[in-house]
Image 1 (tube, rainbow, N blue to C red):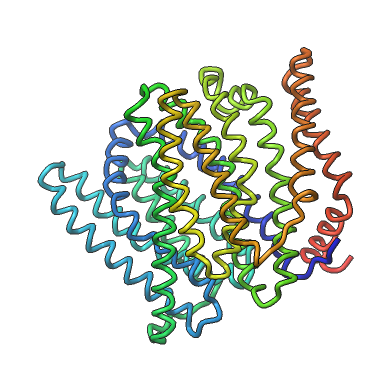
Image 2: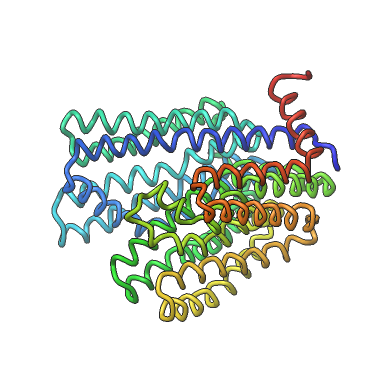
Length: 476
């Protein structure tokens, strides 16, 4: 057992704040979309979707990930102003390309589509800058303030879009919501950080930022190709209805992955970067975060694997039951995602982005070959298998390259929680098959899992809760 220092306690607190706000804002956004669906017409959503689709063609221009550069290279002189300057430059390039493309689109599409596309390009370009200010707050481990700003901005965006729609702005109400989101996040992060931008930047810092961001651009591009390849290939090989089932399965998976990614990127990366000079504490923090994420995510993987029909019926409805066998295979991806994201952020914090590129460059062709063969043989179920298998390959690669930086007690922090999840999931399945009902089966499975994890790691859990309480409320 190891002692948890102040930074680790703040990281646990930050994880709770970010994940809590994430699940608080999610239903607000969902309800807002339901209200908008009752006010606007399908043509309005279609116009917005068409303009957004063209705007996404330029998305790769903003894939340099400047906030990550700020978090990783935080010891460089004037890194904040350098990254802000670089983001402003890319935003200008984004707007310029949008203007050029809008001129070409005007030959083929109505004026309203072109005008909305151009406005969205400007908003999307300007939206590159606020996350840099947000990264300044994350670097200071100000997770609470960062989460509150994001929550307020999202809620204001939803409310504004509804108001604009009620005033008769039609599809432009959705654009207005995006504009309010941009303004709210920019002003909020600017207020929280109190940072005053100065355009004078050191040449060496700028060169290092450009080099690092260029590597992140390649890594993000490979990641985007990985996440889009399955739907592109399925569009040619399976029926539209089957593709719809796969899309909903991926939607359920991405909800879980989104929570993991958000916590690790906004909490784990700043923490790991601040601990680069302290190898022992870096390893301890890695173990703590891996244990916490796996303990939280394994029950979800357990439900995906053992009771997928219950998950689908509860979240999507009985009409979507063909999704169940898909999320059973995606459960494997759920189980490895905490370790994968954690190892990736350790590599990024150490500036080892080339290792990430190597892993993804090897993973992508293997994934495409398995994906095509599996889809031809098993349809969308094969696609789900190929996707999870590719995530396992990526996890092994990231962990392998992270070995010199961190160590992991695999039996205690991975194998034992996994066995607890398997035992609890199997027990729940037996109870369900025995006719006691899905609700009782889920409650029994979750209770058993929590009991087993507490039995195995009660000292670590109690220590983490105690220091988290001290960090939040003062010494008890």
